[in-house]
Length: 135
Length: 409
Image 1 (tube, chains in turn brown, blue):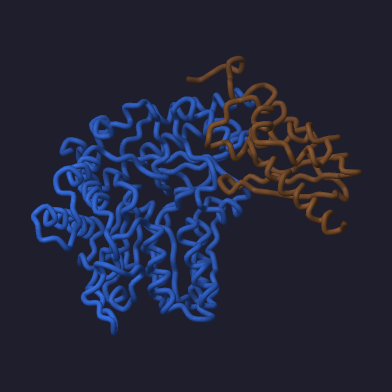
Image 2 (cartoon, rainbow over the protein chains, first blue to last red):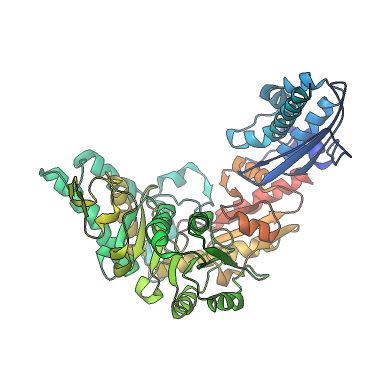
Protein backbone atom coordinates (compact mmCIF):
# COMPACT_ATOMS: atom_id res chain seq x y z
CA UNK A 1 0.00 0.00 0.00
CA UNK A 2 1.11 3.53 -0.65
CA UNK A 3 2.10 5.52 2.39
CA UNK A 4 2.10 9.19 3.22
CA UNK A 5 5.29 11.07 4.14
CA UNK A 6 4.30 11.07 7.81
CA UNK A 7 4.18 7.28 8.10
CA UNK A 8 6.89 6.65 5.56
CA UNK A 9 9.41 4.42 7.24
CA UNK A 10 11.90 4.51 4.43
CA UNK A 11 12.05 7.87 2.73
CA UNK A 12 11.93 9.99 5.86
CA UNK A 13 12.26 13.73 5.62
CA UNK A 14 15.87 13.85 6.78
CA UNK A 15 16.91 11.11 4.34
CA UNK A 16 15.35 13.07 1.49
CA UNK A 17 16.90 16.25 2.84
CA UNK A 18 20.38 14.73 2.82
CA UNK A 19 19.71 13.37 -0.67
CA UNK A 20 18.54 16.69 -2.08
CA UNK A 21 20.97 18.86 -0.11
CA UNK A 22 23.98 16.67 0.50
CA UNK A 23 26.39 17.99 3.14
CA UNK A 24 30.08 18.18 2.29
CA UNK A 25 29.43 17.43 -1.35
CA UNK A 26 32.25 18.26 -3.74
CA UNK A 27 36.00 18.02 -3.97
CA UNK A 28 38.97 18.98 -1.78
CA UNK A 29 42.13 20.53 -3.11
CA UNK A 30 45.19 18.38 -2.44
CA UNK A 31 43.47 15.79 -0.24
CA UNK A 32 45.56 13.47 1.93
CA UNK A 33 43.23 10.60 1.15
CA UNK A 34 41.20 10.14 -1.97
CA UNK A 35 39.26 7.00 -2.73
CA UNK A 36 36.37 5.89 -4.91
CA UNK A 37 34.25 2.74 -4.96
CA UNK A 38 31.37 1.64 -7.09
CA UNK A 39 28.38 -0.59 -6.50
CA UNK A 40 28.50 -3.11 -9.34
CA UNK A 41 24.84 -3.89 -8.78
CA UNK A 42 23.68 -0.54 -10.06
CA UNK A 43 26.77 1.32 -11.25
CA UNK A 44 26.55 3.89 -8.47
CA UNK A 45 29.80 5.59 -7.56
CA UNK A 46 30.91 7.34 -4.38
CA UNK A 47 34.28 9.00 -3.88
CA UNK A 48 35.58 10.63 -0.70
CA UNK A 49 38.44 13.01 -0.10
CA UNK A 50 39.98 13.77 3.29
CA UNK A 51 42.40 16.30 4.70
CA UNK A 52 44.10 14.82 7.77
CA UNK A 53 46.20 16.81 10.24
CA UNK A 54 47.87 15.28 13.30
CA UNK A 55 45.76 12.17 12.88
CA UNK A 56 42.50 14.09 12.85
CA UNK A 57 40.15 14.45 9.88
CA UNK A 58 40.17 18.19 9.34
CA UNK A 59 37.95 18.23 6.29
CA UNK A 60 36.07 15.74 4.16
CA UNK A 61 34.06 15.91 0.98
CA UNK A 62 32.26 13.30 -1.07
CA UNK A 63 31.18 13.10 -4.69
CA UNK A 64 29.43 10.67 -6.97
CA UNK A 65 25.98 9.62 -7.99
CA UNK A 66 23.51 7.20 -6.64
CA UNK A 67 20.20 6.53 -4.98
CA UNK A 68 18.74 8.41 -2.02
CA UNK A 69 20.03 5.79 0.40
CA UNK A 70 23.64 5.80 -0.78
CA UNK A 71 23.76 9.59 -1.05
CA UNK A 72 22.11 10.23 2.33
CA UNK A 73 24.36 7.67 4.03
CA UNK A 74 27.44 9.37 2.55
CA UNK A 75 26.23 12.81 3.56
CA UNK A 76 25.49 11.67 7.14
CA UNK A 77 28.86 9.93 7.35
CA UNK A 78 30.81 13.01 6.32
CA UNK A 79 29.05 15.05 9.02
CA UNK A 80 30.21 12.56 11.59
CA UNK A 81 33.76 12.39 10.24
CA UNK A 82 34.68 16.05 10.44
CA UNK A 83 37.01 16.60 13.40
CA UNK A 84 37.17 12.90 14.21
CA UNK A 85 40.55 11.20 14.79
CA UNK A 86 41.29 8.91 11.85
CA UNK A 87 41.71 5.98 14.23
CA UNK A 88 38.19 6.52 15.52
CA UNK A 89 36.88 6.83 11.97
CA UNK A 90 38.31 3.43 11.16
CA UNK A 91 36.26 1.95 13.99
CA UNK A 92 32.93 3.12 12.56
CA UNK A 93 30.91 -0.04 11.99
CA UNK A 94 28.12 -1.09 9.66
CA UNK A 95 25.71 -0.90 12.56
CA UNK A 96 26.80 2.68 13.27
CA UNK A 97 25.98 3.69 9.70
CA UNK A 98 22.69 1.80 9.59
CA UNK A 99 21.77 3.23 13.00
CA UNK A 100 22.46 6.72 11.79
CA UNK A 101 20.20 6.19 8.77
CA UNK A 102 17.55 5.09 11.25
CA UNK A 103 15.46 3.15 8.76
CA UNK A 104 14.91 -0.49 7.91
CA UNK A 105 17.21 -1.37 5.05
CA UNK A 106 16.27 -4.41 2.98
CA UNK A 107 19.00 -6.89 1.98
CA UNK A 108 18.73 -5.65 -1.61
CA UNK A 109 19.63 -2.11 -0.54
CA UNK A 110 22.26 -2.77 2.11
CA UNK A 111 25.09 -2.24 -0.37
CA UNK A 112 23.71 1.21 -1.17
CA UNK A 113 23.69 2.11 2.51
CA UNK A 114 27.23 0.89 3.14
CA UNK A 115 28.98 2.09 -0.01
CA UNK A 116 30.37 5.24 1.62
CA UNK A 117 31.61 3.26 4.64
CA UNK A 118 33.51 1.01 2.25
CA UNK A 119 35.08 4.08 0.66
CA UNK A 120 36.08 5.35 4.11
CA UNK A 121 37.57 2.03 5.23
CA UNK A 122 39.56 1.31 2.11
CA UNK A 123 40.70 4.93 1.91
CA UNK A 124 41.67 5.22 5.59
CA UNK A 125 43.52 1.93 5.77
CA UNK A 126 45.32 2.76 2.55
CA UNK A 127 46.68 5.95 4.12
CA UNK A 128 47.60 4.13 7.31
CA UNK A 129 49.63 1.70 5.22
CA UNK A 130 51.48 4.59 3.60
CA UNK A 131 52.22 6.14 7.00
CA UNK A 132 53.65 2.96 8.37
CA UNK A 133 55.93 2.68 5.41
CA UNK A 134 57.10 6.23 6.02
CA UNK A 135 57.86 5.69 9.69
CA UNK B 1 -5.02 -24.32 -22.44
CA UNK B 2 -6.96 -24.73 -25.64
CA UNK B 3 -9.12 -21.79 -24.64
CA UNK B 4 -6.22 -19.51 -23.69
CA UNK B 5 -5.76 -18.28 -27.23
CA UNK B 6 -8.55 -17.25 -29.61
CA UNK B 7 -7.06 -16.84 -33.03
CA UNK B 8 -4.36 -14.23 -32.62
CA UNK B 9 -5.69 -12.91 -29.30
CA UNK B 10 -4.62 -14.22 -25.93
CA UNK B 11 -7.23 -14.88 -23.28
CA UNK B 12 -5.16 -13.36 -20.48
CA UNK B 13 -7.69 -14.04 -17.72
CA UNK B 14 -7.57 -17.76 -18.49
CA UNK B 15 -3.80 -17.74 -18.81
CA UNK B 16 -3.41 -16.07 -15.41
CA UNK B 17 -5.18 -18.98 -13.73
CA UNK B 18 -2.21 -21.15 -14.71
CA UNK B 19 0.18 -18.95 -12.70
CA UNK B 20 -0.46 -19.37 -8.97
CA UNK B 21 2.15 -16.75 -8.06
CA UNK B 22 -0.03 -14.05 -9.63
CA UNK B 23 -2.68 -14.78 -7.00
CA UNK B 24 -0.32 -13.31 -4.36
CA UNK B 25 -1.24 -9.86 -5.64
CA UNK B 26 2.05 -8.89 -7.22
CA UNK B 27 2.20 -6.93 -10.45
CA UNK B 28 5.09 -8.78 -12.00
CA UNK B 29 6.77 -6.45 -14.48
CA UNK B 30 10.16 -8.15 -14.71
CA UNK B 31 9.63 -10.96 -17.20
CA UNK B 32 12.64 -9.95 -19.30
CA UNK B 33 14.67 -10.86 -16.23
CA UNK B 34 12.95 -14.16 -15.64
CA UNK B 35 9.41 -15.14 -16.47
CA UNK B 36 6.89 -16.77 -14.18
CA UNK B 37 6.12 -20.44 -14.70
CA UNK B 38 2.70 -22.00 -15.17
CA UNK B 39 1.40 -25.07 -13.31
CA UNK B 40 1.92 -27.09 -16.49
CA UNK B 41 5.69 -26.53 -16.18
CA UNK B 42 6.03 -27.07 -12.44
CA UNK B 43 3.62 -29.98 -12.74
CA UNK B 44 5.76 -31.71 -15.36
CA UNK B 45 8.81 -31.31 -13.13
CA UNK B 46 6.98 -32.53 -10.06
CA UNK B 47 5.73 -35.55 -11.97
CA UNK B 48 9.32 -36.45 -12.80
CA UNK B 49 10.40 -36.12 -9.17
CA UNK B 50 7.46 -38.07 -7.82
CA UNK B 51 6.93 -40.72 -10.47
CA UNK B 52 10.10 -41.48 -12.45
CA UNK B 53 13.00 -39.70 -10.81
CA UNK B 54 16.14 -41.47 -12.08
CA UNK B 55 19.15 -40.78 -14.22
CA UNK B 56 18.90 -40.81 -17.99
CA UNK B 57 20.73 -42.69 -20.74
CA UNK B 58 22.20 -45.36 -18.49
CA UNK B 59 19.75 -47.41 -16.48
CA UNK B 60 17.85 -50.43 -17.72
CA UNK B 61 14.78 -50.13 -15.49
CA UNK B 62 11.49 -48.69 -16.62
CA UNK B 63 11.40 -45.38 -14.70
CA UNK B 64 14.79 -44.49 -16.19
CA UNK B 65 13.40 -45.22 -19.62
CA UNK B 66 10.50 -42.89 -18.88
CA UNK B 67 12.91 -40.18 -17.66
CA UNK B 68 15.07 -40.56 -20.77
CA UNK B 69 12.04 -40.42 -23.03
CA UNK B 70 10.73 -37.23 -21.41
CA UNK B 71 14.17 -35.63 -21.39
CA UNK B 72 14.80 -36.42 -25.05
CA UNK B 73 11.20 -35.52 -25.86
CA UNK B 74 11.94 -31.90 -25.07
CA UNK B 75 14.52 -31.91 -27.85
CA UNK B 76 11.93 -32.60 -30.51
CA UNK B 77 9.58 -30.00 -29.03
CA UNK B 78 12.37 -27.41 -29.15
CA UNK B 79 13.41 -28.48 -32.64
CA UNK B 80 9.88 -27.87 -33.87
CA UNK B 81 9.60 -24.59 -31.91
CA UNK B 82 12.70 -23.11 -33.58
CA UNK B 83 12.30 -25.09 -36.82
CA UNK B 84 15.76 -26.66 -36.74
CA UNK B 85 16.25 -29.34 -39.37
CA UNK B 86 17.33 -31.99 -36.87
CA UNK B 87 17.35 -32.70 -33.12
CA UNK B 88 21.10 -33.18 -33.53
CA UNK B 89 21.31 -29.41 -33.80
CA UNK B 90 19.57 -28.84 -30.46
CA UNK B 91 22.05 -28.81 -27.56
CA UNK B 92 20.91 -28.51 -23.97
CA UNK B 93 22.79 -25.94 -21.91
CA UNK B 94 22.11 -24.23 -18.60
CA UNK B 95 20.99 -21.14 -20.49
CA UNK B 96 22.00 -18.50 -22.99
CA UNK B 97 25.20 -17.67 -21.13
CA UNK B 98 26.45 -21.22 -21.21
CA UNK B 99 25.38 -21.61 -24.84
CA UNK B 100 27.42 -18.58 -25.92
CA UNK B 101 30.37 -19.65 -23.79
CA UNK B 102 30.20 -23.06 -25.45
CA UNK B 103 30.50 -21.47 -28.88
CA UNK B 104 33.25 -19.07 -27.77
CA UNK B 105 35.23 -21.98 -26.34
CA UNK B 106 34.61 -24.83 -28.74
CA UNK B 107 34.22 -22.93 -32.01
CA UNK B 108 36.02 -19.72 -31.15
CA UNK B 109 39.33 -21.04 -29.89
CA UNK B 110 39.73 -23.12 -33.04
CA UNK B 111 38.52 -20.59 -35.57
CA UNK B 112 39.34 -17.10 -34.30
CA UNK B 113 42.93 -16.24 -35.10
CA UNK B 114 45.28 -13.36 -34.43
CA UNK B 115 44.13 -10.23 -36.19
CA UNK B 116 40.60 -11.54 -36.83
CA UNK B 117 37.66 -9.20 -36.36
CA UNK B 118 34.63 -9.94 -34.19
CA UNK B 119 31.59 -7.67 -34.61
CA UNK B 120 29.22 -7.19 -31.68
CA UNK B 121 26.75 -4.42 -30.87
CA UNK B 122 26.47 -1.87 -28.10
CA UNK B 123 23.00 -3.28 -27.37
CA UNK B 124 24.37 -6.65 -26.33
CA UNK B 125 23.98 -8.27 -22.94
CA UNK B 126 27.19 -8.98 -21.01
CA UNK B 127 26.74 -12.67 -21.84
CA UNK B 128 27.24 -11.83 -25.52
CA UNK B 129 30.21 -9.55 -24.82
CA UNK B 130 32.41 -11.02 -22.10
CA UNK B 131 32.97 -14.49 -23.67
CA UNK B 132 34.12 -12.78 -26.88
CA UNK B 133 36.37 -10.37 -24.97
CA UNK B 134 38.05 -13.34 -23.29
CA UNK B 135 38.40 -15.13 -26.63
CA UNK B 136 39.75 -12.01 -28.37
CA UNK B 137 42.31 -11.46 -25.61
CA UNK B 138 43.43 -15.11 -25.74
CA UNK B 139 43.65 -15.36 -29.53
CA UNK B 140 44.67 -11.81 -30.44
CA UNK B 141 41.46 -10.83 -32.21
CA UNK B 142 39.84 -7.40 -32.16
CA UNK B 143 36.23 -6.50 -31.39
CA UNK B 144 34.16 -3.70 -32.92
CA UNK B 145 30.76 -2.69 -31.59
CA UNK B 146 27.92 -1.43 -33.79
CA UNK B 147 26.57 1.77 -32.26
CA UNK B 148 22.93 2.83 -31.88
CA UNK B 149 21.14 5.90 -33.15
CA UNK B 150 19.05 8.35 -31.11
CA UNK B 151 16.11 5.93 -31.08
CA UNK B 152 18.17 3.11 -29.65
CA UNK B 153 18.26 1.23 -32.94
CA UNK B 154 21.40 -0.24 -34.44
CA UNK B 155 23.32 1.92 -36.90
CA UNK B 156 23.04 -0.40 -39.90
CA UNK B 157 25.23 1.91 -41.99
CA UNK B 158 28.01 1.28 -39.51
CA UNK B 159 27.22 -2.44 -39.44
CA UNK B 160 27.63 -2.66 -43.22
CA UNK B 161 30.89 -0.69 -43.05
CA UNK B 162 32.24 -3.17 -40.50
CA UNK B 163 31.20 -6.09 -42.72
CA UNK B 164 33.51 -4.73 -45.43
CA UNK B 165 36.38 -5.60 -43.10
CA UNK B 166 35.40 -9.30 -43.38
CA UNK B 167 34.73 -10.16 -39.74
CA UNK B 168 35.20 -13.78 -38.79
CA UNK B 169 32.29 -13.67 -36.39
CA UNK B 170 29.20 -11.50 -36.03
CA UNK B 171 27.20 -11.91 -32.81
CA UNK B 172 24.18 -9.83 -31.82
CA UNK B 173 20.95 -10.01 -29.91
CA UNK B 174 17.66 -10.57 -31.72
CA UNK B 175 16.00 -8.27 -29.18
CA UNK B 176 17.74 -5.90 -26.75
CA UNK B 177 17.04 -6.85 -23.14
CA UNK B 178 17.65 -3.30 -21.91
CA UNK B 179 15.75 -1.24 -24.51
CA UNK B 180 13.52 -3.81 -26.14
CA UNK B 181 14.80 -2.87 -29.59
CA UNK B 182 13.90 -5.52 -32.15
CA UNK B 183 16.90 -5.79 -34.42
CA UNK B 184 16.40 -6.58 -38.12
CA UNK B 185 17.92 -10.01 -37.51
CA UNK B 186 17.17 -11.65 -40.86
CA UNK B 187 18.61 -8.74 -42.79
CA UNK B 188 21.68 -8.61 -40.54
CA UNK B 189 22.33 -12.35 -40.72
CA UNK B 190 22.03 -12.32 -44.52
CA UNK B 191 24.47 -9.43 -44.83
CA UNK B 192 26.93 -10.98 -42.38
CA UNK B 193 26.78 -14.36 -44.12
CA UNK B 194 27.34 -12.66 -47.48
CA UNK B 195 30.44 -11.05 -45.96
CA UNK B 196 31.70 -14.50 -45.03
CA UNK B 197 31.15 -14.30 -41.27
CA UNK B 198 29.94 -16.99 -38.93
CA UNK B 199 26.86 -15.60 -37.18
CA UNK B 200 25.55 -16.14 -33.66
CA UNK B 201 22.21 -14.69 -32.65
CA UNK B 202 21.49 -14.21 -28.94
CA UNK B 203 17.83 -15.13 -28.75
CA UNK B 204 17.39 -14.78 -24.98
CA UNK B 205 14.80 -12.04 -25.51
CA UNK B 206 13.73 -13.16 -28.97
CA UNK B 207 12.67 -16.77 -28.53
CA UNK B 208 10.25 -16.09 -25.63
CA UNK B 209 8.50 -13.14 -27.21
CA UNK B 210 8.42 -13.61 -30.96
CA UNK B 211 9.86 -17.07 -31.47
CA UNK B 212 12.29 -17.96 -34.20
CA UNK B 213 12.67 -20.00 -37.36
CA UNK B 214 16.39 -20.68 -37.39
CA UNK B 215 16.35 -21.93 -40.97
CA UNK B 216 14.62 -18.80 -42.22
CA UNK B 217 16.90 -16.66 -40.06
CA UNK B 218 19.91 -18.42 -41.53
CA UNK B 219 22.23 -18.01 -38.56
CA UNK B 220 24.93 -20.50 -37.61
CA UNK B 221 24.21 -20.44 -33.88
CA UNK B 222 21.18 -19.38 -31.87
CA UNK B 223 21.19 -19.29 -28.07
CA UNK B 224 18.32 -18.91 -25.63
CA UNK B 225 17.20 -19.60 -22.07
CA UNK B 226 14.23 -21.58 -20.84
CA UNK B 227 13.62 -19.45 -17.76
CA UNK B 228 12.66 -16.38 -19.76
CA UNK B 229 9.99 -18.36 -21.64
CA UNK B 230 7.98 -19.97 -18.82
CA UNK B 231 10.52 -22.73 -18.16
CA UNK B 232 12.64 -23.26 -15.07
CA UNK B 233 16.11 -21.85 -14.53
CA UNK B 234 19.01 -24.11 -15.45
CA UNK B 235 17.84 -25.27 -18.86
CA UNK B 236 18.54 -23.46 -22.10
CA UNK B 237 19.36 -24.22 -25.70
CA UNK B 238 22.15 -23.83 -28.16
CA UNK B 239 21.09 -24.36 -31.74
CA UNK B 240 24.02 -24.86 -34.12
CA UNK B 241 24.28 -25.82 -37.75
CA UNK B 242 25.20 -29.47 -37.87
CA UNK B 243 28.43 -29.23 -39.86
CA UNK B 244 29.77 -26.59 -37.48
CA UNK B 245 28.83 -28.62 -34.40
CA UNK B 246 30.37 -31.76 -35.92
CA UNK B 247 33.69 -29.97 -36.38
CA UNK B 248 33.76 -28.53 -32.87
CA UNK B 249 35.46 -30.06 -29.86
CA UNK B 250 33.45 -30.64 -26.69
CA UNK B 251 33.04 -27.82 -24.17
CA UNK B 252 32.57 -29.74 -20.94
CA UNK B 253 33.82 -33.31 -20.90
CA UNK B 254 33.36 -36.35 -18.72
CA UNK B 255 30.53 -38.82 -18.37
CA UNK B 256 27.78 -39.34 -20.95
CA UNK B 257 29.47 -37.37 -23.75
CA UNK B 258 31.63 -40.30 -24.83
CA UNK B 259 31.32 -43.43 -26.93
CA UNK B 260 34.37 -45.12 -25.49
CA UNK B 261 37.11 -44.09 -23.08
CA UNK B 262 40.38 -45.93 -23.20
CA UNK B 263 43.64 -44.99 -21.55
CA UNK B 264 44.95 -44.27 -25.05
CA UNK B 265 42.18 -41.76 -25.71
CA UNK B 266 38.46 -41.11 -25.99
CA UNK B 267 35.89 -41.28 -28.76
CA UNK B 268 33.24 -38.62 -28.33
CA UNK B 269 29.55 -39.27 -28.52
CA UNK B 270 27.50 -38.21 -31.56
CA UNK B 271 25.58 -34.96 -31.69
CA UNK B 272 23.92 -33.63 -29.66
CA UNK B 273 25.26 -35.58 -26.67
CA UNK B 274 28.89 -34.67 -27.44
CA UNK B 275 28.15 -31.36 -25.75
CA UNK B 276 26.20 -32.70 -22.78
CA UNK B 277 28.67 -33.96 -20.19
CA UNK B 278 27.75 -35.17 -16.74
CA UNK B 279 24.33 -35.68 -15.21
CA UNK B 280 22.02 -33.20 -16.83
CA UNK B 281 19.32 -30.92 -15.45
CA UNK B 282 16.71 -33.56 -16.16
CA UNK B 283 13.72 -32.04 -14.37
CA UNK B 284 14.53 -28.62 -15.81
CA UNK B 285 14.75 -29.93 -19.36
CA UNK B 286 11.41 -31.69 -18.88
CA UNK B 287 10.02 -28.40 -17.55
CA UNK B 288 11.36 -26.60 -20.60
CA UNK B 289 9.50 -29.07 -22.80
CA UNK B 290 6.26 -28.22 -21.00
CA UNK B 291 7.00 -24.51 -21.43
CA UNK B 292 7.49 -24.96 -25.17
CA UNK B 293 4.19 -26.88 -25.32
CA UNK B 294 2.48 -24.03 -23.48
CA UNK B 295 3.83 -21.33 -25.81
CA UNK B 296 3.22 -23.42 -28.91
CA UNK B 297 -0.36 -23.89 -27.73
CA UNK B 298 -0.85 -20.14 -27.55
CA UNK B 299 0.97 -19.44 -30.80
CA UNK B 300 3.86 -17.00 -30.95
CA UNK B 301 1.91 -14.61 -33.15
CA UNK B 302 -0.68 -14.22 -30.43
CA UNK B 303 2.05 -13.82 -27.81
CA UNK B 304 3.70 -11.06 -29.82
CA UNK B 305 0.36 -9.35 -30.51
CA UNK B 306 -0.53 -9.28 -26.80
CA UNK B 307 2.86 -7.92 -25.80
CA UNK B 308 2.64 -5.25 -28.43
CA UNK B 309 -0.77 -4.15 -27.18
CA UNK B 310 0.47 -3.95 -23.56
CA UNK B 311 3.66 -2.20 -24.64
CA UNK B 312 1.76 0.42 -26.61
CA UNK B 313 -0.54 1.00 -23.65
CA UNK B 314 2.39 1.32 -21.23
CA UNK B 315 4.40 3.52 -23.57
CA UNK B 316 1.51 5.92 -23.88
CA UNK B 317 0.82 5.94 -20.13
CA UNK B 318 4.47 6.58 -19.28
CA UNK B 319 4.79 9.26 -21.98
CA UNK B 320 2.15 11.28 -20.15
CA UNK B 321 4.22 11.51 -16.96
CA UNK B 322 6.27 14.68 -16.55
CA UNK B 323 9.98 14.30 -15.75
CA UNK B 324 10.06 10.81 -17.23
CA UNK B 325 12.52 9.92 -19.98
CA UNK B 326 11.82 6.89 -22.15
CA UNK B 327 14.71 5.08 -23.80
CA UNK B 328 14.55 3.11 -27.01
CA UNK B 329 12.40 2.92 -30.12
CA UNK B 330 8.63 3.46 -30.48
CA UNK B 331 6.42 0.58 -29.30
CA UNK B 332 5.84 -0.81 -32.79
CA UNK B 333 9.57 -1.48 -33.10
CA UNK B 334 10.24 -2.93 -29.69
CA UNK B 335 9.45 -6.03 -27.66
CA UNK B 336 7.64 -5.88 -24.32
CA UNK B 337 10.37 -3.94 -22.56
CA UNK B 338 10.33 -0.29 -21.47
CA UNK B 339 13.38 1.34 -19.93
CA UNK B 340 12.98 4.77 -18.40
CA UNK B 341 14.39 7.28 -15.94
CA UNK B 342 12.76 9.78 -13.61
CA UNK B 343 14.26 13.18 -13.06
CA UNK B 344 15.77 13.42 -9.59
CA UNK B 345 14.78 9.89 -8.59
CA UNK B 346 17.24 7.05 -8.79
CA UNK B 347 15.86 3.84 -10.35
CA UNK B 348 16.63 1.93 -7.15
CA UNK B 349 14.54 4.31 -5.12
CA UNK B 350 11.68 3.96 -7.58
CA UNK B 351 11.98 0.16 -7.44
CA UNK B 352 11.86 0.25 -3.63
CA UNK B 353 8.75 2.45 -3.65
CA UNK B 354 7.12 0.28 -6.32
CA UNK B 355 7.92 -2.81 -4.27
CA UNK B 356 5.82 -1.45 -1.42
CA UNK B 357 2.91 -1.45 -3.87
CA UNK B 358 3.85 -5.02 -4.84
CA UNK B 359 4.97 -3.83 -8.25
CA UNK B 360 8.06 -5.82 -9.28
CA UNK B 361 10.28 -3.56 -11.32
CA UNK B 362 13.90 -3.94 -12.37
CA UNK B 363 16.38 -1.18 -11.62
CA UNK B 364 19.99 -1.32 -12.65
CA UNK B 365 22.24 -1.65 -15.65
CA UNK B 366 20.46 -4.79 -16.94
CA UNK B 367 23.79 -6.52 -17.61
CA UNK B 368 24.33 -4.01 -20.40
CA UNK B 369 26.89 -1.64 -18.93
CA UNK B 370 28.37 -0.61 -22.31
CA UNK B 371 24.86 0.46 -23.38
CA UNK B 372 24.28 2.37 -20.13
CA UNK B 373 27.60 4.18 -20.68
CA UNK B 374 26.52 4.94 -24.25
CA UNK B 375 23.24 6.39 -22.96
CA UNK B 376 25.13 8.35 -20.31
CA UNK B 377 23.27 6.83 -17.37
CA UNK B 378 24.36 4.52 -14.56
CA UNK B 379 21.07 2.69 -14.46
CA UNK B 380 17.50 2.74 -15.69
CA UNK B 381 14.21 1.43 -14.37
CA UNK B 382 12.74 -1.26 -16.59
CA UNK B 383 9.26 -2.70 -16.89
CA UNK B 384 8.85 -5.80 -19.02
CA UNK B 385 5.76 -7.73 -19.99
CA UNK B 386 4.66 -11.20 -20.97
CA UNK B 387 1.63 -13.29 -21.79
CA UNK B 388 0.05 -12.77 -18.35
CA UNK B 389 0.54 -9.00 -18.11
CA UNK B 390 -2.64 -6.94 -17.80
CA UNK B 391 -3.24 -3.26 -18.33
CA UNK B 392 -4.19 -2.74 -14.67
CA UNK B 393 -0.65 -3.81 -13.73
CA UNK B 394 0.68 -1.02 -15.93
CA UNK B 395 -1.74 1.32 -14.14
CA UNK B 396 -0.28 0.20 -10.81
CA UNK B 397 3.20 1.02 -12.12
CA UNK B 398 2.00 4.49 -13.07
CA UNK B 399 0.65 4.83 -9.53
CA UNK B 400 4.00 3.87 -8.02
CA UNK B 401 5.81 6.36 -10.24
CA UNK B 402 3.48 9.14 -9.13
CA UNK B 403 3.95 8.11 -5.51
CA UNK B 404 7.74 8.28 -5.96
CA UNK B 405 7.42 11.72 -7.52
CA UNK B 406 5.28 12.85 -4.59
CA UNK B 407 7.81 11.58 -2.02
CA UNK B 408 10.77 13.09 -3.86
CA UNK B 409 9.13 16.36 -4.91
